[in-house]
Image 1 (cartoon, helix red, strand yellow):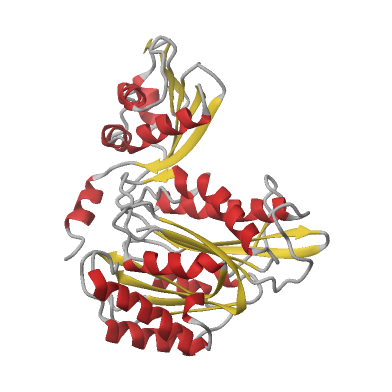
Image 2: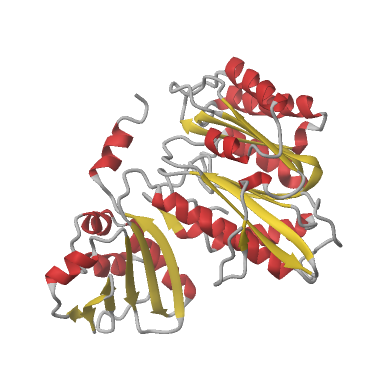
Length: 408
């Protein structure tokens, strides 16, 4: 077990099944043409407090609509996930299919279908192969165990190139609690939550209200600060379940320990969010964009997201070109208040613009700095104390190829 000296958190193995009280499974049901795992179950041993946040896309997929309805109670027993088919834009039959997935899971576990969250990811507009899906759910239910977090994380992948899972432990009043998580996503990524799926578990005894507050707070500064291509999926969802299996007194929003557990949830979400960006479709570079000196944090976030979403900026980074004009353009088209005569831009540690005009710099040194795998770009508006950081990736030829062949 490794301890982070920066946070005090200890890293653990197991992803979503690292916390006590959770079981998982991931199987191949034949939905994916590749034959890889494509149905996952995440199950709490007993019904427990839960909360979720969802895409703001008005074309929200059937699973999102069903889960929003089911999780309104603040109680969950399980999540069922399929990859390879998004069950989005599928009309009334899609809603019936999402409900059937919840019911099949509930029947296998002996719980109420309203305690089951449903998530799907993959191609939009295709009918669900329910014979395969239902068979996959039955198989996954028969394979549930406390060490299958890895298999579940694999089963929710689509164009992802690596598993995204993490777990950390913290202590509250001499009780050790664990928070685990898994996620998928590499394209159609700009969550704006309120084709990214994330599932977070903890054995801390959080109340349903505490789950909701902790999750929203975490998502706002993690998943909502990443963008691969500015597209908000029809299927984005993030679910938190709290088994309470590690014991201790119930932890509400105002109770001792809430800040520690909330910080751990935020840390897990942050790790997963950065993994998603690093695995952006065709990505060759991880980019951290920071805007500071804004009139407000909101202005800073808008400007940072505008930079991170700019295809011209992202292609410049891919080409190793310190073209700071693309940053200036992106700041200017955002809704942030800007004084052009105060703008300062720093590319990979090299100041390229100050007081709104070019600063001479060594092009060779800049090219060398931009050849790194991780790049930091900072824009200082010099108008106030507002600050925000957004994570993104470059835009490469491979991104076009992957998405040009997505359905093939």
